[in-house]
Length: 343
Image 1 (cartoon, rainbow, N blue to C red):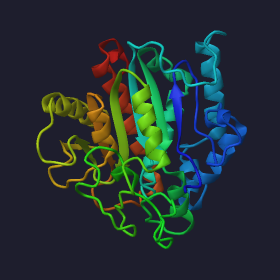
Image 2: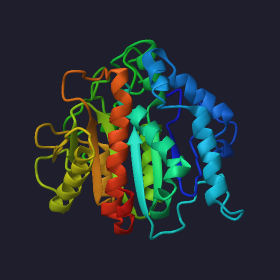
Image 3: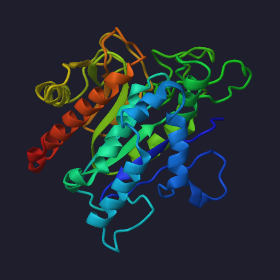
Image 4: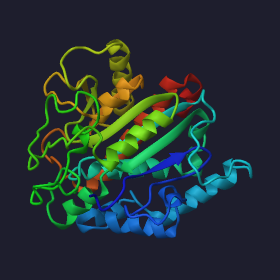
């Protein structure tokens, strides 16, 4: 069993939520509680492990600033009727929803850093206009226990840390092979010691169940981004086959727009391709979101192409985060034409 639950942030009128830590709960209410000093302290301790201190120095995670920004957003955007600590996704059904998931693979440290940076920017009152045109749901750390283990024991650990029956020496499930879309068909393993072990069944893991619940519960999800590393490429479905998916033209066009927004604003040039052309794997979150009707679903393999691999130098963290954030702001204008002025 995992030691932690994944957590996320919901931004609409400045509200935040996340799943509780640790897994053991006192009551049902503890599964969704407001962001507070205790929870930020726990998150801060995870991010301060090992070399991750550099992430703090880069202002990727500044808990005081984040908390202040959320409070400021509440003052600016919320009325007494709007204030709530519960996640309510059933209002404003016409409003576009953007889901950003990061940190599924423990060793890909740049992924939760970028996810946290995006959350911080969304909480900044200077970016409040972004909340007028979309509901943003950010899951900046899907795999907390694996991520923590990659700091304390094995830098290149990939899976979560669940104890597998019969093989206690081989813990963990690859979360990005555990979704119910061509599960266990290709690109994964039934060997519990494998990095790509897909689990005993689809959605065997609490982390993937949480994403499933999120996608099923929220209506009108227009964009789903799964942040990984490395490769500097935007991958679109399908990942389990080289066959083109329905609507491949629109998928490709939106991905090209995202890549161009990044490069045209001083960022790196990201390639765009179908995920299953060079390497096929089933059970991925992007393919699952696409199968559930999300029109634009992508995996973003963050920089760089090969030199740094999973060990992104600390001095590159902020630049990567900023270019993805800038690309997202501009991409919102492609999803919602009225928001083009934000680019």
